[in-house]
Every structure is written in structure tokens, then in C-alpha cells.
Length: 400
Image (cartoon, rainbow, N blue to C red; front, side, top):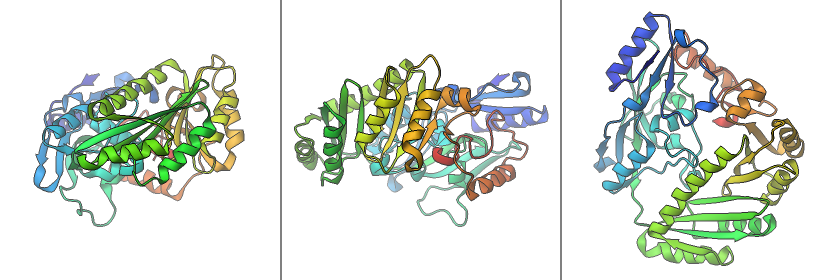
């Protein structure tokens, strides 16, 4: 059974009706992360609520740099409307450009701009959501300082919709950067790339994003400079020198480079059956690439991610399954970093959706607090009943 409400009130009514029938409510946006979740437990006993109907134009408040958007609006449409008003939400999705705003916030996904602009949750001021009784609630507000006590807005971010149905989000904004430029540089070896990227991270040009993608054939680094029109070119030129002769792409070429990178990440995801999130703090880039090359020997593989803060994704293909690579990666990294299987890999290997630790992350005190809060805020597990509770569930452990 499926419904696509067009308003928050229709969504609330749909939840009330489902609860009266004894059904759970599975929430879905654009479906860009459908493979990350297990099948619905019983389609006859679960209402599939499609949020893409909640997609009208946003309400902008230019004077206090905030705006409210429907949760089902694609992130690309959010950014386009803001750009027309000279405003900017520093939130991007590297490999799922079709994702909705609500999906990005509910999933708590990382952000290519995270290094310079923080997590998506850092930009959310308030939420409109439907609770498990079908009531329409408002949390937070329209101003930056609007929270006293426990921040329930952040509690819902990264919870994968288990705590309520998000129908709209109020976000804080920045003025649209006047200009941007991208510096790209190809490297023949991980050691050469690592030295250049360490220097770029220390450089006064302060890139907003520092990404790297590559495999056995070589690596490519991309650094994005954003800011005042009178300074961007000089900062980009300086960063190019630091990287050892990178190509500087101005304005429109820079923006297209990042759109092409989104498409490239999507193509990489489609081409490989398995992937691992690597949150590596102690080893350098050389060790990460050496690890990937050793673990994926004889297989097709690509490593891509945020060189600025050490968050990478390893993609590979192996008809025999993921365990040989998983075991090799874990054996090398040990306690110096965390390793998680994503999406279909996690579901097939660990029986859990989303991001599952390898080995599972130890239980945290916060996990029991989160579970108690979800039980209090959404009793009866009405929303997304197919998702698991506890440390291995999406939104817990490393995924947060």
C-alpha cells in the first residue's frame, strides 16, 4: 500500500489512518538509498509513504539568512532556488544528486563541504514533522539561538526516519559565494599525492573541499576555493603551486567539474558491487592506498573521498563476496580507524541495513539514550519498522 501526500496535513492524516489500521509506516524519498534498507517486513501491514509530493517552493527569509523547505524537495532544487536569491546552503551529496533534502537530513550523510562547513545537522534550525500519533509538530525555530535543554532537532537528524516523518526543514544560510575556482592535479603515486595534500591542508588558501579519487592507474586530487571574487583566483593560483602545478579551473568550469564528480561517484557506485567506508585518522594517504591495493589485489577497485578529513569510500568488485577484502582491511587497520560496510554489502554480510561496523562498534552509553528517546518520541515503532535498533542500525555508531 502506497501514498504520496502533497501537504504536511495529508501526511499526518495518512499516518493516523495507518496507525488505526495497525500498520507501520515506511518513509521513502527519491529512493537514492533504497538498497541500503532491507525489504519491508510485510507489504500488506506497512504503508509506504512517498515524500516526493512534499516538494513546493521554499519560504525564504533573506533578512535573517534562513529558509524553510518541504522535505521532499530535491536538494538540487533547494540550491537552485537559493541561488536565485543570492543565498547558499553548504550541503552537497557526493554520489546521489537526486536525493531529497529530507532524505539527506534523515540519513545524516556526510558532505563534501564537511571539512570547511561542518555536517548537514549544523545547518538545521528547525523541523516540521509528524509523530507516531499522526500529530503535526514543530521543533526548533527560525533563529540560530533557539534551543534550551536537549536538542530534539538534532536527535531526528541521522535517525533514518525512525523517530518521526519529516515534512519540512528550516535551515540557516550563507550569502552565495561571489566566485569559485577548482584546482585539479593528477598524481602517479600515493606518496606524491599525500605530500601535496598535506601541504594543501596547511595552506592559507583554505580550500572549502579537498577530494581525491583514484585506483591502480593513478590518483586525481580536486580542491575547491570559494569566496570573494577579488581573492579566489589568487588563492587558487597559490594552491596550485602548493600542489605542484595543478590546473586552475575558474567559475563555470569549476562548478561543472563538481557536477561531473557527482556523476563519476554515481558511476563508480554502479560499477562495483561492494563498498566500505573508511574513517582513518592515524594512517596517511599512502597507507590507505597501499591497504586498498593489497586488499583488492586482482580485483577492480576505486578509492574516493575527503582527503581533508580522512573519510574515504573503497569500492570494489568480487564475485566471491566481500569477506576477503573486509578481513584484509580490518587486519591492517586494527584499532587505528573504523571500517564499515555500506548498503547492500552490509545487509548481505551482517543482516543489517545502512552502515554496519566491521567488527561492530562497541555499544555506547549514547546508544541506550537514543533507543529510549526513540521509544518515547515514537512509541510502537510506527516509522520505518524495517530498520533495526541499536548500535548497528543506521544513524548509530560511525554513521552519526
